[in-house]
Amino acid sequence: MSFVISIRNLSKTYSMGEQLVRALQSVSLDIGHGEFVSVIGPSGSGKSTLMHILGCLDRPSNGTYLLDGQDVSRLSDDEISRVRNRKIGFVFQGFNLLSRTSALENVELPLLYDSETRLTAAERRRAAMEALHTVGLQGRERHHPNQLSGGQQQRVAIARALMTRPSILLADEPTGNLDSQTSVDVMELFQRLNRERNLTIVLITHEHDVAAYGSRIIVFKDGRITSDEINDKRKATVTGSV
Image (cartoon, rainbow, N blue to C red; front, side):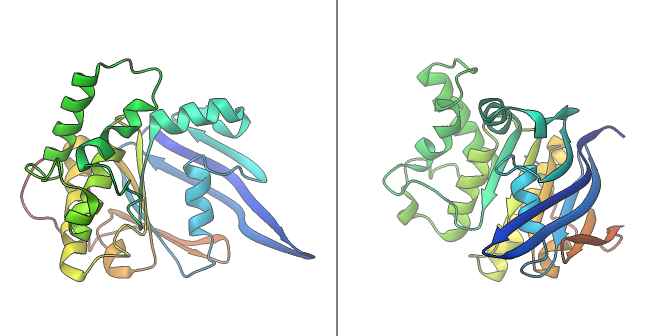
């Protein structure tokens, strides 16, 4: 199996006044193309720090991080921004949608900031329409966030994350603001994207029910991996395709 993510002896240390906080301690990890990995742990376990480093939003204090074989820990800020924009899709707990902008325009945003993809306005619009249809929001393209339910807003955020055809999709507590049934719907969507598109997904969560949708579960505690196992009891998705 080829690896989209490969980290070795990754550490991250923060200074809080006179106190030294070791958020990550010599973590080594490989994630293959097309895996659906759930990272779970309590608050302060290091899972969010890991996500920020994997998403090129932060740099490690020590160690290496290879993304698609490229050592991103050695890149300049501008180079890291390009890698992040092209290879990583983000889905957050808070949706992060522009409130005065339609679902369609929200989804188009990544292509507006992508200087390497020179699409016309019509091409961007068509790509955004296709992404919204992929996540089941046909007919909602002109709706603003306040006209959409929480689950629909999260689907808009997922569609936006898919726009640059990223190598990995990082989902940080994506069901944190959703009710139980809507959470199931969103997790089933992630499973279908993983299966049908062979999309690598790294899910950060503190909920065991949510982590159970992944094909592999990694448990963090005190900045270290305490367990890394294939999930033989993975929750099954409904039949469908994207």
